[in-house]
Length: 214
Image (tube, rainbow, N blue to C red; front, side, top):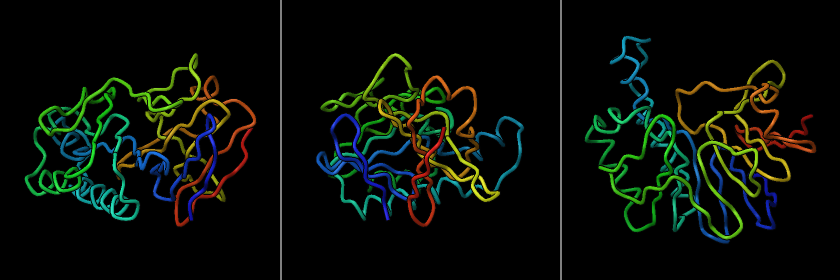
């Protein structure tokens, strides 16, 4: 149910969940988990949301780890809604995350919401280059062969906005993997300098659906 494509000569799989899998590297990549968002909103006097998003996001991540059995998991930034949310992670969630990390490489890329949750373990980097591909949180319009997150892209189809990957010849932008996340529509002006025609939006959902976009 995934969509397979090539970027800089490497075969990649856009998964229906919004995760990315790189078979040759046994690498699972997710972006913008935003763990602890409901706690952060409540702490700062924002909207009161049911505090279940961390549990559900970790459940979804666990399902992808079980399905793909990666040797390396790469989180592309904004893994926590802020550093206080990382420090305040409930013990159950902390233990669940530790079980996911056990026995495999785990890399946290710095995001604009978090500088990398150093108390949780794993490797912490501003960006990471593997083979021809560079992984970072925010896309750089001057770079190529790049995979990033940050923008939480979505595409409206049949009246409903669905999270999506954005893909052109030079880069891939991942959707947010976290439960409580907004996003930018694929035609938002902020994305126009980054995604050039010919381009695809790969919709998430029951299956990954590629849709040509202008």
